[in-house]
Image (cartoon, rainbow, N blue to C red; front, side, top):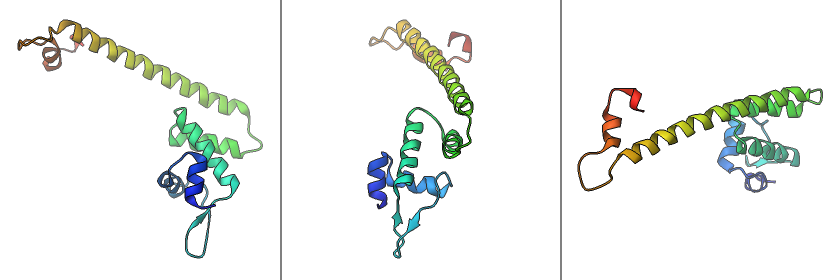
Length: 134
């Protein structure tokens, strides 16, 4: 199948598929005499795998590790589990950080009158060199 069909089936864009091949994340595929890529079902399955991994938050380096495990018939599931648990912890740290930012913004908004006057706690906080108010 051509790259457009591979893109449709995998949920990735043609540009992303080409990029993955360029960086060596996926194996180069066969080409026709006129240079068009030809994708076999196995290549599309790997693209689907990568699409799902990216959808749940894995970066390209992590995807490379997961794809390596997927391809390795002698793999140990504990390696995949360790990657998932590490990603879970990273996501929790990011969630905690985002929640803290949200609280700061809510606090700033609650102290701003939001009226026609020039006094604004939000702008004052952002202009302040003292980080203790944030």
